Image 1 (tube, helix red, strand yellow):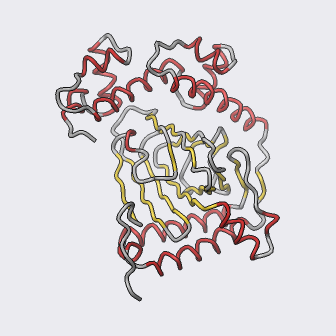
Image 2: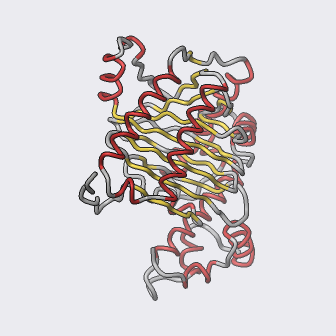
Image 3: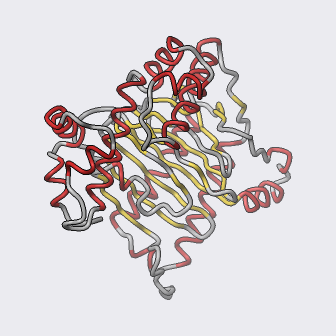
Length: 328
């Protein structure tokens, strides 16, 4: 078996240690996402990305409760499976061991993941997936939903898919060159992935949410509407009433929704969002071009003692320490 040419950008195997929400997108060229820490501590997350011939496999783990809003490339479909200990929600639906989540192309999805979270995502081209199903006489099973869906596949099938992904990731971490150097290995792994995934999907059925889950989905929709408005107007002076108008709900309903989905009040979320924007600005700053005071005032923090304390609680360092770091 002869080595193929090594991919220069990006490599076929990437191992990315994430200590800042700013770098949550690192290495993933098919996903755009905005991540916010919902806990005050030092973030220790990890992503391992394996690019096969026709698919991308992404392993993700984190030590903190995180809110992320990934949007997948318009020509790719995502299937997400989770470790037995993972907990959190996807668009308001709970993460469960017997469930596989399908993420449609070009759609933003709201994840809230708890500490000790592990997931493996499989990104596939929609046309290729349809072709594989057609070859097996299962073209009628090809389904691209308009929003994320939970598929009940059973704990055994979901566990088998997660275990397959974990073996791939473990091999890639220990021996990255067999994927970086040899196209045949990537082709073979991709074929094995398709067999494993299609076996998992055989007999899959859409989860019919119960009453409490429908309530959670509704609350997630409220939060996403408020969140989108907040992100679009993050440099403005925002109040809870602005978020209520954007989401079309009362202040009480907004409060309940944010606490159910985020574990934070709307006010605490807005403050956390602005802290993240200061953090991003300080990390990206060129020496001498800005100061902590300038960025704090820009994002609405006028009490510098309280700002510094909140910043350190969130990111584990003072804003002045962040500013001294090399520019990202």
